[in-house]
Amino acid sequence: DTEVTQTPKHLVMGMTNKKSLKCEQHMGHRAMYWYKQKAKKPPELMFVYSYEKLSINESVPSRFSPECPNSSLLNLHLHALQPEDSALYLCASSQVIKTPIYEQYFGPGTRLTVT
Amino acid sequence: AQSVTQLGSHVSVSEGALVLLRCNYSSSVPPYLFWYVQYPNQGLQLLLKYTTGATLVKGINGFEAEFKKSETSFHLTKPSAHMSDAAEYFCAVSPNQAGTALIFGKGTTLSVSS
Image: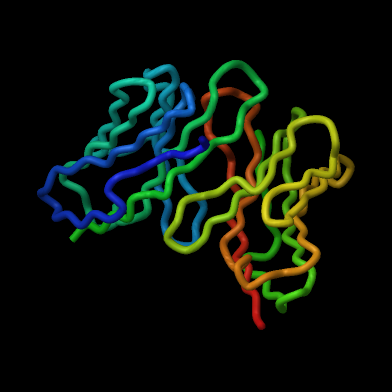
């Protein structure tokens, strides 16, 4: 099973709302990632969790707050977003052992619209 | 530092024609290379990967890619395009460090006409 699931599929929220995106994988991967993707652009890395600890934060604004409750789950908490935050949010996972790096498996994404 | 360049942001082919999507990389260490495909409103799906060993790599849906170290290239090909191949294609290189992000090219949109 090489599936990463994400919920919800679509989300519309106002600038004062608080919402969360969820990601789940059962492949035993110990690295999980959040990416943001704008139309016709490659994914941009936001956060990396390695063994449930935040290892990379690509200078993402604090209105995005990641959480990794366990090795299978990854959340992204959203608060006071701006319209320019509207995008496709992708979750991915991969093995974490040593080099060589393993490929990342992506979920279907959450299409976020901020009004 | 590693980087990826995809030549041609948009490639158009006729159904049944050869598909060639170009990817060149820059890496100071032996690279690990990937091709991903993204259909509209979907996530990225791994097409194929090169890590070590055989330089001609076969992937899903009839795609293959050849790693050419001398040319620093990893071009994606398919002998005969199908309408269902129309999608966005991303080439990516691994930083060769577990738990870090892939470095993506800017992507190539493949259109297939009947």
